[in-house]
Length: 149
Image 1: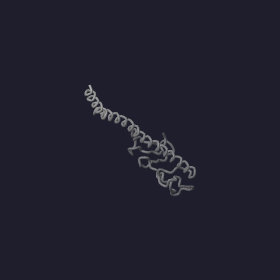
Image 2: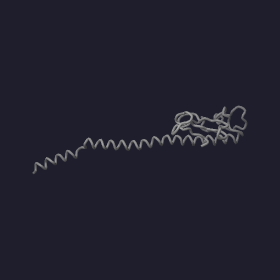
Image 3: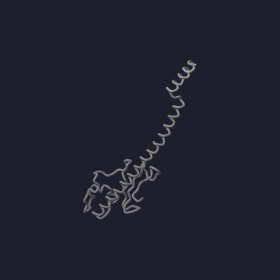
């Protein structure tokens, strides 16, 4: 009986020392599933954050344009563009800038310039970021962000 116990005892000790290949594969699959779910959520949040940042910056540009209009009496023309917020356009009286304090014109979160049109089709002016693809239109993260929505 002693030899039978020692025989089963050694198997139990071997079994306690390691995991089977199936157990390891199950753990790896579970880790992969969890990482896929968590990683997918973080990737989507990054694009949403960029879209929100672009919307906020468009609103800040709009407020700066409103201040420009209060002092100059009109919005910058399309030809003068947003550059008029940094340096006085030729022939403009009452310019008291620079109105955009950061020293350079802002770029959207994807590194593209904002499009400015005055008069706009949707208001006194239109400001547009072309989204992640840098092209007009698009869906999802590539959708344009604008000043009128």
